[in-house]
Length: 486
Ligand code: AMP
Ligand code: MG
Image 1: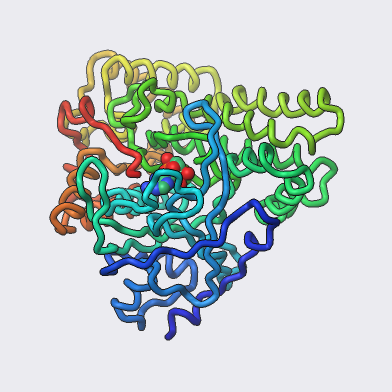
Image 2: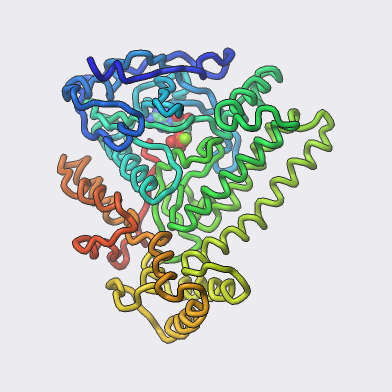
C-alpha cells in the first residue's frame, strides 16, 4: 500500500502532559465514498495517492482505516464565544497526528465530522456534506487569494444521515493546518491546568511555531508580539479581499496566524462596513469592519493567559502586555492605508494618497458599490463589469486619481500592473457558492461546484468565459444568511 508508506507521522502533541487532549478514535462510517481529493495539497505534503484505489481512499478519508503512524487525539480548549467564556474542545474533530513533509514542514492532519469525542457535549460529532464542501471550497479560494488558512485535503461521504433542521448527507473533511493551537487552548490551560503545565504549553508552542524566540529574554511577551503581528497581517488580508470570517471567537483564532474555523464565513460584495451574514451573529459583533477590533480584543484575552510568564510582578506584566495590545490599533491603521494605497496602484504614500483612499471609501459606502469590482474599474474604466455605476462624483475622483498616478514612477501602466497583483478579479460570490453547494450536496450534481472551484484557483487572472461571475444578482445579499454548519 503506497499511500501508507508516504505518511510520515511524528506526533508531538501527544507527548504533552495529561489534560491537553483525549485519546479517541474516529467512529467508523457505514458507506464511505470519496468526493474530493486535493492534488495540490497532496503534492505539498508529498503524499502520492495516484496508485491507491478509490475504495481505499474512501476508507482512509472517512476514518474507517487509519494511515500508518496516526495516533488520533481530540484537543482540549476553551474560548470566548461572542464575548463569553466557555469550555469547548474538539467536539467533532480528531487530530490524526502531525505529518512531516520532506521539506521539514509539520502539518496537523485533522478529521472534521468523524464522530463524538469527550468534548462533544450535546453534539453528534458529525458534519454535513454541505458544510464540509463549503470549507473545502473556501479554503482553496483563500489559498489562491494568497491568504494564510487551513487547507482541505479531502472530503468523504459517510453514507449516514446527519440530523439538523432537516436531514443532510454526512461527510468527513480532512483538514490540514500548521497546528490547531488556538488562543482558546491557552485560555483552557490558564483556567484549568497547573502553572507547570502552562509553562510546558508555552514552551511547546514557541518551539513548534516560533523557534527563533526560544532563547529570548522574555519568551511569553515575544510570543504575544509575534502572534499579534501574524494576526494583524491576516486580518489585513481579509480587509483587502472583503472576507468576513463570521465567527471570530477566541477558539477560532490560531497561534500560527492561519485562518481557521471559518464555517459561516462569506465575502462582502456591496461595500458596507457593517456587513455580517452569519445567522448566529445577531448583534453583528463579527461584521466586516469590526474584525480588526475583534482581533485586538482576542489578543487581549491571549495576553491575559500569558501574564504570569511575562513578569513575576503582575503590574509590570500587565503594563508590558497592554503596550502590545494598545499599539495594535495604530499599527493596523497604518498598515491598512499602505494596503489600500497598493490596491490603488500607488507606489508611495503621502497625504494625497491617504485622502484619495478616504474619499473612495466614503464614495463606495454611499453609492453601495461592489468592493471587488470597484478596483477593477479604477484600473480599467473601459471594462466596467455589468452592474457598476460610475456617477459624476466617481468620475471626478477618478480624474484626481489618474493625475496622482501619472506623477508616480512608471505612470498608469506600472500602476495597473501592481493593481492586477493585489486586486482579485474573482472572489467566492455568495450566490454562486450557495448554488454550487446546494446542487452538489443536495442533488449530487458537481458541475457548478467544479466550475467555481476552477475559477477560484486563478483569482487574479482574466478568465473571459467567467466574466459574468463578477456580477451579483441584485437583492441576493439582502436576505443571505450563513450557518455554522454544525
Ligand atoms: P465552531 O463554531 O465550529 O468553531 O464550534 C464550536 C464548538 O462546538 C467546538 O468545540 C466544536 O467542536 C463544537 N461542535 C460543533 N459542532 C459539533 C457537533 N456536531 N458535535 C459536537 N461538537 C460540535
Ligand atoms: Mg471552532
